[in-house]
Image: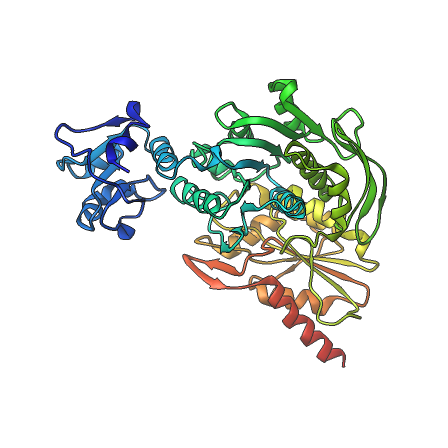
Length: 498
């Protein structure tokens, strides 16, 4: 594709120097100067520590035929090269150019975007499962991985940056995918990563405190999430959780003809459930929808998973799936890695061990409440909080854990470059003086201690990392998996008992 054709997609954002050669044939797009190949267009993206546009000389030396950078990056080194183009909004320019280069794939794929603080991963997996049950080839892009028929790759970001995102969508389209399901993070919306994407369905799960290290406050966080439901992105219907206060606000701001509300039990919502019976293995009841009613059984526990299911059913209906086909398929859903995942090393294990991704106050509270019916004895909660992230949620999570669990083991999560002891103290500040927590900075040791503390009938909940198979200490990422550590600890416990 010629450079001129790409630049024509963003004419108002660029300052193209006289004499620039716009007829060169672009054969790829790169945002990392080290990854540039001959024939590429280099787009220098601003970062948290350095502006990638400053490396345009390296990109051109590697064979890139042109570079698009921000005016700020150009100030560091005069952009005298004729094929160095300045963009007044580099993020928007990158997204639109990537969309054009990869042939605007979301105009050919029905897209579902799911946003919210909690529930995105389970909801997207449920939608993928229901579509696959209907024999529809799908692509799933989210926290765990990007996958479609013939391809699966571990995800680095919940929502990829624009070039990678459009490249993945184009590859999925080439694999005959007809529907795409995407977790859409607030970071991605605020940073314009999904500009150029068109969504047939947008689902809002909830909004609770998180990411206040990135967003100014909860209003800024909500404003970012609400972008998905603007005409720039949403071309079809919004499916919104009306049990959530921010969901209600979002509904009030949208055209009623464009919205289906959903609720766990409020019969005024467009989709809701009734005749509910909860058990240790799931929930059954009747789901009511604009397309009729149906009995269901969901093999997941907790009210929040019931809400995820109703949102997923709403998305499926909007995509043309049959209600009864979906509810008949639900019992076969096996869940999501790291979400209320049981760890067992033998069938008659005398304690329960559950690993979950809960890493916000709301998700930790939901986890502890949902797990209680599983545990006839005491509930031991192991958790920590990430470093270089929102400090204000740490004492809140400590207070929740102390209130709902019988024993709290406070440990490290991903300390990153923060002092682990300071993070632990922030958490402990939320606990009552008489709560007597166990405090162990080393996460593996903390998990072992919790498993050894457990008596027959007790349950150990290990929260915060879920599916993650790494821990970030300083700037180093090391292998670490809560599930592996739990299995090791269970093995030691059994040996000790024997």
